[in-house]
Length: 138
Image (tube, rainbow, N blue to C red; front, side, top):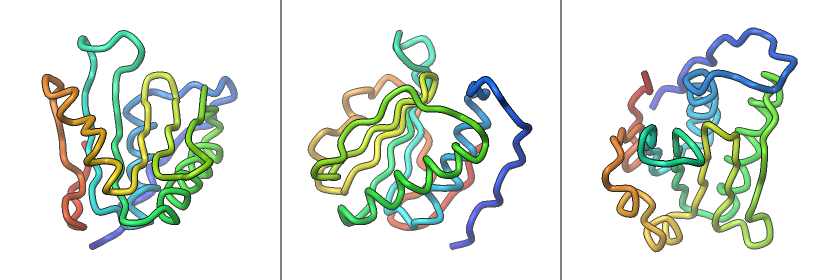
């Protein structure tokens, strides 16, 4: 599996970034930690609180933390601030809220239990990594 290229980002002092660039950065960062699944749900027109979910599945709690840290680091380098973070205690599920994009990082057991893809079944879905094989995002 090849690692996606790091997208170029212009400096952004306001902490705002367009959702497509944010998604590309987050997907590239998450891919470096080799997730077992990586799914984009396009919630535009279906949800009032965000436009996109990025759902990352990894095999272990340790990787949940590693993915969260990698994404936060990459977006901090692009000067993007997140609105909210949840789930550090057990780290089976960490949520990173960047307003237009909400990133859910799960261990696989927890991902299957909550089944966000099923809950938001009406949303257009793109599988970016499935069973460890990657696909590029836009």
